[in-house]
Length: 484
Image (cartoon, rainbow, N blue to C red):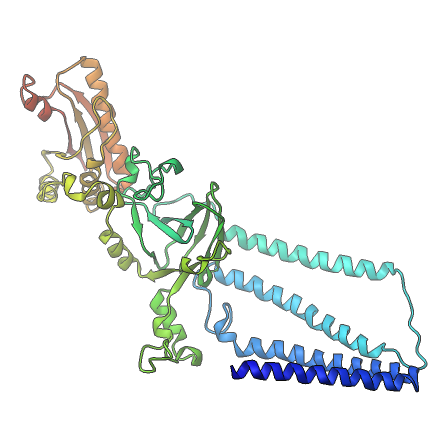
């Protein structure tokens, strides 16, 4: 209330002074009209010069005073490897435009004073000057061209053509009013297909559960990234235009409905390392909560963030998400703890057959002895086809993980069928199923292991084909060592 009264009083005082000056000007104009105009021009010119000094002084003062809060200044170095290049372009642009900004304002206000109306001076009207027009056209064009070309060079570094995706960290971020859905690929390192027609309360991304690549995809509440690893973010939106903005990483890309975009960057500092950069800076040594002076300091509570840089609605503020950068081994440990969205929300994990507890032990025994074959108990296919069912992925992922620890092996993946149907058709089906398992394992990453797919059809039964139980046992997939 006190502030309101002060503002009202200030306004009224200025209004009184304005009216008084008008009365004085009117009274003097009745006596010496020319002298009054000269005097008014001198006062206005002087006030404009004073304003110019105060204005430019305030610009430099406040930029210096708040430098530790601004990105690219003070302790806020870019947290991504490409960010330093963007900051360099920013500094060059600020230097060029800043010089022009200062000089044009000095000229603007000084000319208002220097060429004021006064006795003995007459204004000149110049309609056109070719030389001046050329200078003001060519100079900005040359400067802008240089800035654009330097910017394109940085852009090509930010958006490279990635050929080797083996070490690439991938995630997908979908904006909606008002939040983000963050999806990581599972062990197969591939995103499953989506269809907007399938979006529902239990399927917020419209994932197509007919695509087995969706079964191991993860939905998480925050973005977790490994330091020093290249990250590719697939960006899209579910309703209106949003903007994927990671300010500390100098990453910003619009999220457009129906038109996926992407951003690529490499984190340079972990969250803890960035906090240490802020430690000791006066602005970040104060309590994070002013009402709790004994609580943690601002530097201790710092977190990277994902924000939406579009005004996408009244709930725009709630789109903030935490971004955590950790060491690569911490990232891998975090990733292993995450659970498939499909298994935990669509089909409960307990309903999915699990690989037997001694599967890894059987694998280790076979690998150590260099002989024998292992039946993949939980690898199944849809009836009459070579399409893996979702129950298969966990055992295959366990197998891929085991093979990574034993590089240089040569294994045969064999497919077998029962004796029902045509012999040639059974042989072809068994070969296709063996091929499907090999393809899945290779996508999951198996190092230098060599896999050979072999279909045997119905030629190697392990049980009589005259009972349903026997035929079920004969329909199997096996792996065995055939060389090193």
